[in-house]
Amino acid sequence: MTEEEARLIQQNQFMRLCGIQVLEDPEGRCYAQAQVTSQIHNPYGIVHGGLLYTMADIVTGATARQHGRRPVTLDSNMHYLRNVTSGTLIARAEMVRAGGSIAVLRARVCCGETLLAEGTFTYFYRRET
Image 1 (cartoon, one colour):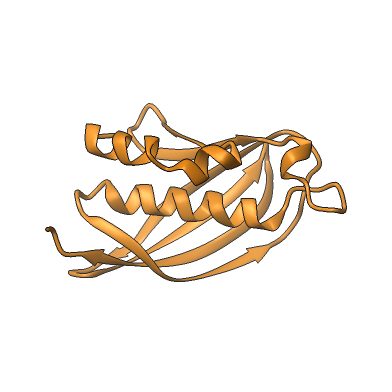
Image 2 (cartoon, rainbow, N blue to C red; image 1 turned 90 degrees about the vertical axis):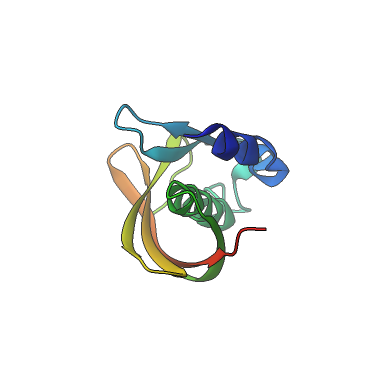
């Protein structure tokens, strides 16, 4: 992760409010992580779907940014498959296609070996200012 990427992540107050951290694995790929606490439960006592979506959006954006460009989310779809009441959530992303101004990425959010949600995110690369 470059210094610029780390600075942008550090400035993301919403991410901190949600308890999400962006980390880097040994191969240099970023991933998002959050501990399940009662603060991120919905009224049914399971992880709020908005947190799963936010983690996927953050990790796909960070992955799209690794190409040295400035992405903004254009579109997404998310499929919620399972849920948990405790544990550590991990979101990972992969680039499907990076074009001249549009990128498509896929995200998966898991707790251990359990796949909780997966989604596809489309990004527009902003012009440099």
